[in-house]
Amino acid sequence: MEIDVKQRCGCRDPETKKKYPRGECPKRGKRGHGSYEWRFRVPKELIPLVGKELMRGTAPTRTQAQSDAEKAVSQVRAGRQHVGKLTVGAYLDGWLSRKNALRPTTRARYEQFIRLHLVPYLGEMPLAGLRAEHIDSALKLAVKAAQKRPGRPIGPATVKDVLEMLRTALNDAMRQRKLDFNPTDGVELASYSAPEVEPWDAEDVGRFLDEAAGDRLAAAYELMALHGLRRGEVCGATWSGLDEVAAVLMVRQQITRSGSEMGVWAPKTKSGRRKVDLASVVVGSLATHRLRQDEEREAVGPTWNNGVLPDEHGNPVQLKDLIFTHPSGRHLAPEYLTRQMQRIARRVGLLSNVRELAPAGSTTFVVGKRYRPAEGTWTLYKAREPIGEVTVLRAEGLHGSRALLHLAAPLTVDLGVCDEIGDRLLSPKRLHDLRHGSASILLGEGVDITTVSKILGHSSTSMTGNTYAHLLRSTGQAAAETIAAAIPRRTPRAHPVRTSAGDGGGIVEGGAVAPGQGPIRSGRTPADSVEVAGIEPASSGPATGLLRAQPACCFSAPPVTQASRCGLSHCEVFLADPVTGSEGDPPGDARS
Image 1 (cartoon, helix red, strand yellow):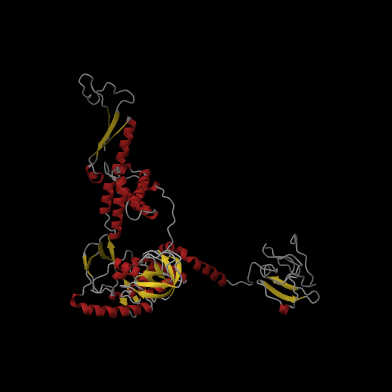
Image 2: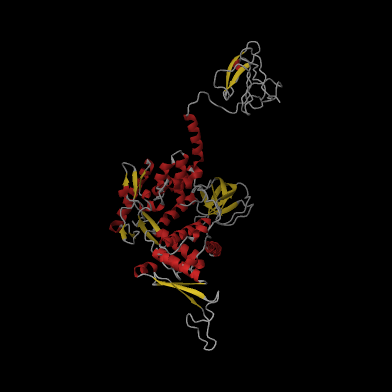
């Protein structure tokens, strides 16, 4: 590739008012006059990679023009594409259309990121000119704009996801030789801590399952709460994947939604395609569910059909043999499970909802449908937060399902419409939190994290650890005690050794010495003395009645023959001389 560098300027002939022909300007030899244009032709075999036939540019000096041209030649030889006027918006649209391996839900989320958070602020910017400061400003503007739009504003987690998607897209641009570096590497996000997963505890999960026991989808909730299945995996579970004898369910597919469309797809990762060992109670629930479904199928007749959904490639798939369906036989939408779960969870412990305003001081108030007998003491709730208690004497029926509750004492708070009355109402949770609850209970019961990760179908144990690290505190303490108990020791090391009456250990003559100092004395016979943690009592001297004691924290060898003191600051034990029975003097400044 031959480089051609020529000087050019825009000077005109004062007489003709026309530009001087190239190379004929009278000021051409002056320093700093005009600019230098470089150009070269791209070999035919490299044109498809580079995207153009002629490369050219300008520089203020001949030396700079020559250097720029040589750099361009090296890039052409490396096959780098010339992006020219390619904008960030056009590149991202093209990049997303070429990501053929993305799952539909991920594709929909990326499309939203590009449309709402990137294109409005970076869309018209040339890709080659994109810098870290542009990206930082765009993300801040996107956060402010989201606060003004109806709906939920975007938080730090979403901003991080947008940046990671853009980083991936620009890494692809580097691999395609459209960029020399990735400008996202210079973007620094504000630090934040992801909220810890706080699902229901075991008691609350049990109360929910008890309330759901009468629902036709009770077995679905047991699969999620006990074995951590995702809702899409529950919707896609099939009878052919269930081995009732071995108590194993094979997870092969899931029904999920991408935007306004549903599809049936294989699990996202290889670890998601797994065998789930089932508890006997869940196997029994599935057997009961099968009998109910057989009755529904018989009632519907030959029109029973699970429906058709597209797979991840858009090909139609005839669904069959689904475990959980509508009574008509059609497959379940994932959000249907969510709605049903929320309805059941709101009912746990609930007596009723307040239907009319009731000011403080009232002795009656109107409620709607009652789920339990009204007589008794109940808690009042506003937005699921307790605000007081009432004792209901009786309920008087009104029109429809409404009732008037008569109270033993006047209300102490104002009640509004939709306030609730009940006992230990469940805190609001998502359907997915049943899966989190399963993991937290398993970890709390000491199941190792590798097993929990396999049960949940996580791609790695690190993902499980990052999500549930805060739930491992109790197991960490148990592990510490386990290792301590597993290592044999000649002498237990119980610290600190309490030796004074003030500390609650030993027997000290009243007023003899300050607490924590002096020898251990006994006003009783050794048989009547008390045991002190970390001290091995010995026989008392016949003349003095001193109770000789050996602090386990200091001495693992036979008893010493002179008064001694533990070198540790928290141990104040002195030994009597085992030969004379007299009290030894504490070393150094022990009594100071």
